[in-house]
Length: 117
Length: 342
Image (cartoon, rainbow over all chains, first blue to last red):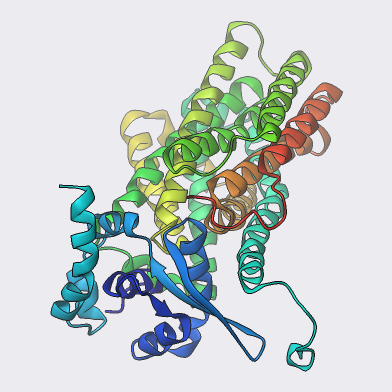
């Protein structure tokens, strides 16, 4: 079963390091699991997460009049997401290797460990 | 089309980016306001019907019955139709299996208690009085979110807005002698009950904001209404035997069922547009305050115009002052709307 788009977006961003992921790369990645029509809400989800301060824009570029943005998950929200979502299950549903995600998230975990013992 | 004018020195990228995000917040605020008349139509009618047969057989059973038998069943139906048409119904079951989905139960209980308190207050003090006071739930939700979520709320315009709300409420209450069906201790208890509704809805408002951060709003909304339907009916039939008589009369009267459809569908439209889309897009502070104040202003407005409650200028003037106060709380300088929660 596919997770709701919002869970999927959050999970992918969680598995990505502080460098973040371009919006179009995220679209391509999710296109393997969702129909294109279901992904029309992708930008809306990203803006929602950004409005509440869960995401920050790591880089912005312009291409042919279009705004391209690379989003990265805010560090302070990672423990909340770990608590609220069953990430192993979601990573499995999205066909993302849990091991890879673990290593990708490791630098974040290490960075946070400094602040919270 | 914009690619033909590359030489024009447009706004910088971060500015464009912020403007794009701010647009969504504005759309949410517009949705929250547009939904107002639907709530006025629905809860204004509920406030009139709750004092009429068969609901006046016994109180507060009648208030319980109008919520459990008319408002919520048709509301659930309306939201289900919306979910089916918009294709978001799949999210309603996909969102389970994660701890965050417990928010659905939290908002359902909070929403049910608030709705029940509103119906009880409407029976005691009427919709024209309960409406404007009930609208304050948006402000309570905004304050809770402002504190817990660090949504920026405290500015000079917020303080003037809060003062406006206070003055508005005072003016509305002075109209209570005209529009309230009861007086003395009953009126006082009615005001206490609607204040209870305001606090409960305020917490629910915050919970919706917190839940929609992670959960798809439409699926979340459906469970909020559906669980309320189950909880309300189970409690009512278990605790109040008279409810069975009322249920029999309600469901055998086509006119009452039609009234129920107006109440339930109107409530569903407000829930979808104002409450959930408004809050999910514009945040608990802006979406919640506008959906609350504007929607509940229309309850008072329709009650004393369309639904035959004695007219009182004080209620209208007070409601308008409250609305201006709410508008001041949510007004933001341009380009400042996005990324509120630092």
